[in-house]
Structures are given as C-alpha cells and as structure tokens.
Length: 119
Image 1: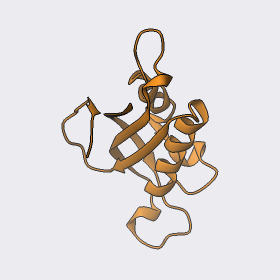
Image 2 (image 1 turned 180 degrees about the horizontal axis):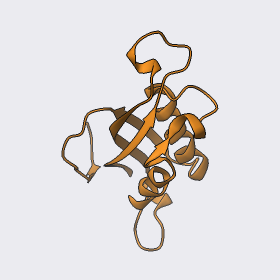
Image 3 (image 1 turned 135 degrees about the vertical axis):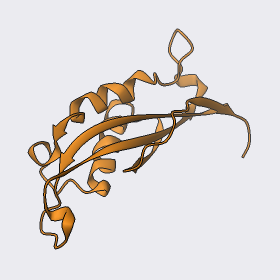
C-alpha cells in the first residue's frame, strides 16, 4: 500500500538575488514556509511503523534558519534554489521515497497529516 504524508515548517533567513535588477537584489529577509509531501510503499516503514519522520524536515531547516542564504548557497538563493536544496537533502537521505517540496515567502498555519487511499 502506498502512503502519502504531508508536513510543513517555517524558517527565517536573509538573502539577496544575484545578477538580478530590482529590489530583491538588495539584502532582505523573509519568513519562509516549506511544505513537503512524502510518498512511499508501506514496506519502507521502520520498526516503529513510521515511513518518514516529520523531524527530518526540522533537521534540514535548522541548517538554514536565521542564516544569510548567500553565504550557504553556491547559486543565487532564489525560491527555486531553496526548494531544490531542500528536495536534494530529502532525496539523498531516502532515495526509495518520492518527495514534493513547495516553498512560500508567506506564512500560514501549520498542518501535518498522513493520507491513505486513492485520489
């Protein structure tokens, strides 16, 4: 049976866009929202019955929270590259699972859930 999990978290950071003409070329900050969907066969659950621990996202976010993203990223820290960074961290740790990542600059309330069944 295929399981789909969802979680979201938030982080604060500063950045500026490299090689960009406009106000985002200057240092500024955001409170980012990260949404993650995880999909995998239940055969990949661990001994405690967990397919993927929601704390895994927290560990990734801890690396970029309250950071100047231009000092951490080799590419311009655009929303596309932030999403790619998080996705790469996830897939490198658990290549047997499928992930979808969404990154927002606007904060909304937190939700976590697990779905099972058809769409």
